[in-house]
Image (cartoon, rainbow, N blue to C red; front, side, top):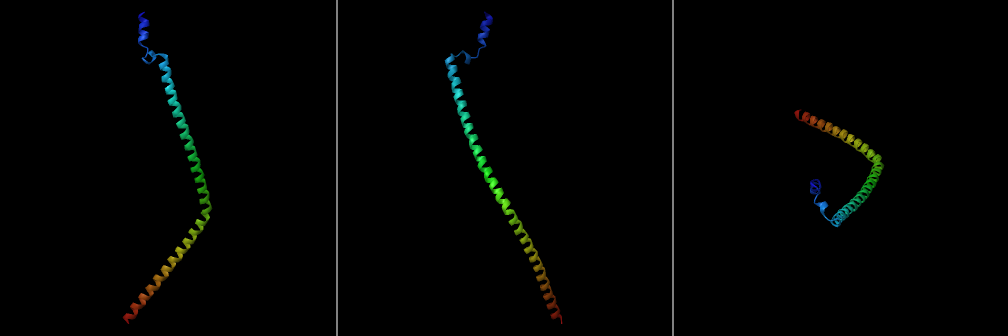
Length: 110
């Protein structure tokens, strides 16, 4: 009989409740878990849709960038040529100014 009393003492308090209380508690837990599941499903669907839209926008932008690349490359070449011409013109100008300066010093010395 002592063994039976010891076994009864080890039973958790929750299990000592009437079965109806346990059932209600478990039903509440199941309901809360179901709501969490539905919210997680909704969030996953939203995230999937957001990803699809972002991915589609990225692919469209990448396609447009690929289409514009040859034009950008051609404009870069034009810019490089224009800068080279500017640099050559600057050197020619500086040489001409130096010549005028040199000639004007020589004219004042005479």
